[in-house]
Image (tube, rainbow, N blue to C red; front, side, top):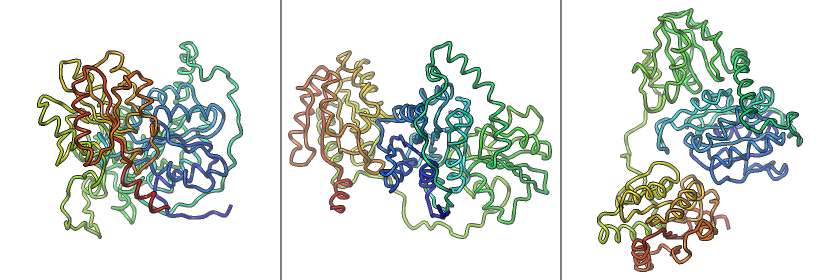
Length: 532
């Protein structure tokens, strides 16, 4: 194949690299800023030809486990999620470092500093460090491509999954990416050790000792990695450690080259040899990293010396929000003269539910009943478009914590004596992590009313397939909800009185009831009409 250069998002560069490296399957649950990786693979012409698995999973845990299963069979797999999805996948993720892999496996964690569309700013590098797993962190789109393309072979060489950590700005910005030759997918094969993936305590202890013994190999790989570079500079008053996209921001401030020595970090664990070189040469250290002070803490632990380390912990950089070229300029005492200033022409305003959205009609009916007839009520919300019911004009929900928490928090509040305790959850979030909470409710016959607002898609991330479409009633019945207390209604103005009566009846029922207002998302419906 002739090498070609394409203008790609960071997410698209990762997807294309996986395809070029002989990918056999991608496993994911949609979550910004990672969604476009899977969508790119789904739309790629080569995907149906090579029969590459590309369907959305019910949640990040099932995605991680299925990807490990494909690796078990010797083939290359990619699993993608946003940073909070790592919490859901953590059980399998941590243990996959102990089982190891057969076919190459890359786990993409897309972090969201500044919480553009997230509940927190957690830094996925802590997960990789916790699991004792090698990690990549690209500084640009080309490096993201190269890390994935070469990362599958590295994963197979090391016998471990590799964590690739990216951030929103890299995921959703474009740059020219030069592709490499397409590789042939792996054939079906299995480990020579038939008990490699059987984590009985005796086997797990042996494999964990082996993982610990390999840490020195991972450090040597980092020291030899093309993604980690020591770049000397004449001014030794300061040494800079620039991680991932932080290196890109630093170079924007020094287009002619940085005056200070720089250690560029793109692969973990940290390269101790280059780190010692930087520390021995400089009077103090500045750490530039997007996210939490992961490297800053590690460096302070590694050194045990009197050298000053600056970064997020000492206030040189803010402890929250994104790293930016401007914040980097301030940290190095250099004015960043932006060519394009952002004009203040449009006043910021919070997002709102689409006009005509079924969630609007659901909230209108629900709040009318609750506010007028049940003043002691509390509504426990969840993650999705309907979370916007917390804002004007509804001010309808009292909590939003994590995927699936609406049902279990409503149960806990009901256990405490609250009535009515109402949960509002979407169809995709329900199948992601609400079903187990519903089972707890059924097992104890909790006095809760659960509203599954069904728009037949995963709308918040762009309209991907929802795992429960067409099956919500049977799922609820199978879990044990009494069929007469599974109520379906079409959320439209003409049906308000019916909706309100159903809400009253189910609140007054002393047990588990489920109300399903169902109407297709107007955005996905509009796309279907345009594509006809």
